[in-house]
Image (tube, rainbow, N blue to C red):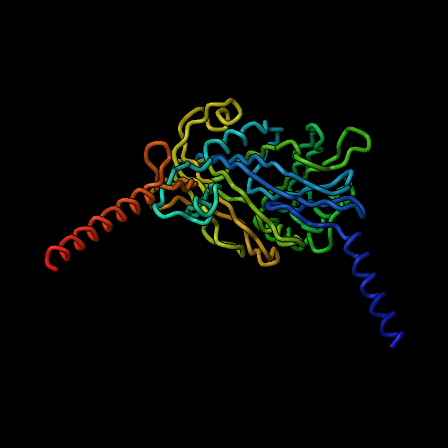
Length: 356
């Protein structure tokens, strides 16, 4: 019995130690790779996608947690890409453009938080959510952008791509070369980003500077396949700017995508206006959850919907129906009913007296 208990305790201890040294994979559109035994996780990933039918631009911002001083991030792209730092102010403007509309909804009878039950008020929220001979790996370009070391690569062999990345400081997990093979077969290119803060001892925590990746594409695609290697549930938030309302072609192994906003907008602040050219565009905001990342079976391909139906979430503030200086209508109604009842009773009593 003692031996069994010791074995059980050892197994539990090994499990806990394993959870400490194994990296926490997290990223909704690529592979986030911490250095050595450090840990890193993406708490939130939000991306802005601009597509005009010929060119696609993706601006990504990550909120990360962990203790990694360095990490690498890989993203496949269907064409030759350029990479720049972006201004995170555009996310604030998009948040304002898509915030829910507020409406007041009245109710007649008092609820548990109303007088005479309580003097407190409450709010409710309702809303439908709703070539041969070419090098195996080619370096298109490499530049330092803030805390990011960015390499733009081509590859005709997934193993050669893996070797190049490892030789240049990008530590890869087992199996990533296999996951990259479909992209190699389609002759996609790659953006490899090494997050290496210039400040000595700085950890990769909090909100990172957003990156903007631009490439030619005749279809709107958002790479997601590599996220199947994640070990924790993933969340994806997309702001899609295009000529029409857009929707994913499938769930690609996640929950049903939820549209949180749809409508024509005109950007006013410079960062977002530069992305849209200052012209009105149709904005579709989409949220999606991936409880089991291993079920992700492809990349998101977004298409125009049959109609550009607008949609905005609604937040209802429930209020008791009152008149005048806040007198509840139900109280007046009850009082009136009592008066009428009293009058009716008085009339009946008088009639009885007359007939008696």
